[in-house]
Image: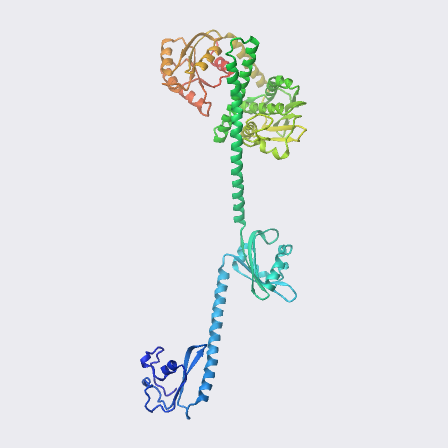
Length: 615
């Protein structure tokens, strides 16, 4: 080789330029040339500078039936023979096996490195275990993601049995499962494995498989957030289904609650047309119509109240309230109803001093108390109903207690939710829209208190609610009492008033005429704003205008504004059936002195007239 001066050593050759080397491939057998100088058509020559050839031998090396290399030797002192072929073939086949083994080892190393890189950079955790002859499962490896998922350094456990590395797993089926896989192979998958103790906490998905005999590898990922989202989705679905069910039950209930009093109103109104009715029968039918109308009004008021609460339009109007006055009113109001059911009605105030005053919304507190006492009487077939209050921790704690049917524990929170009742089936025993307690809860929370119930089925219920307590002097109470007494005196001083009723609804107009008859010396009527303005200009001695807001041609707001352009002193009280948040403010802004919502309460109307007109 030292004598060879060939510099060009190509790896590819054209077929026509390959001589003895090519013949070895073409003939797929060794080619021996013991006299290279002799004429031989198979020779194609050799590169410039090549050592001088005397004799030459080429052999093909096969891998199965494929020629993988050609080996050549030259210039042996003796002629080449079959023995040389066999020796060179054996040598080169052995060398080829070494090359192939190196290639396989290199490929395996590359594959292992590739796999290791995948595991090292995988987003899921990896644990490796080795099973020893004495059946110990030894922690043998991990990856960086495992540290992130579990929040610990997993390398500290290498060389330790699984029970020592992860004690929380020792109480599960996991170690034995891993041992079986390491020994016998197979795959294992668990979709959700929950832990809330020790090192491991949360929900995990795991895959285990045998990587080699007595070795097992585990892939795991934290699915806590996914499971939480799935649970929230299930709960949202159940809530939506429950909402649909409640909506259907509520609509069915509302249909019943509205149609029932309407049936009484329309049915007995039709019976009143009978010509031969006695006076007693007429009064009986009228009382039924009034009762049905009151029930209908309660339903409508509840729906309006809950709508205002839901839309955030309910406002709190604070004033000084004597709770004893509220309880006295409740007692007087509900005593006839209690006696009708043969129930004992008690008013209990452990703190009965007239000096107790709370700064709260009187109407909302009274609405809550009325609702609770009404429910107590309704759900108490026999026994008693007791209500009152006492002072606890600078709070006034009201209670309404009864000896009625009671409420099961599972229903005690439900009854304060919107449109919920203890019984929501169509065959329930007691009527009602299921809005009263939810309205009460919203009102009490607005006023800075809380409401709850204690009850046992068959032994009655006690509803409690609290309100912040504020003390005011007795002199102030006496001053308020004197003001109320003076108002009563002023009522007696009223003389005939000149009144204009502006109302387009015939029935409402007739009702107002009846309600103002004791005050009115002269009562004029208008059906729209234009007529009202003309009458005001013509009759300058008018004292009071009862002005409907919703009218044809010109609404009440604009009518009031135009009247104020030429008459600043006349008292104008607006009235509307809308009773929505902001109506009163709009009426005052337009120039009205006050506002009253339909259906008009005669006592409230009288108070408003007394407030502005006394002679």
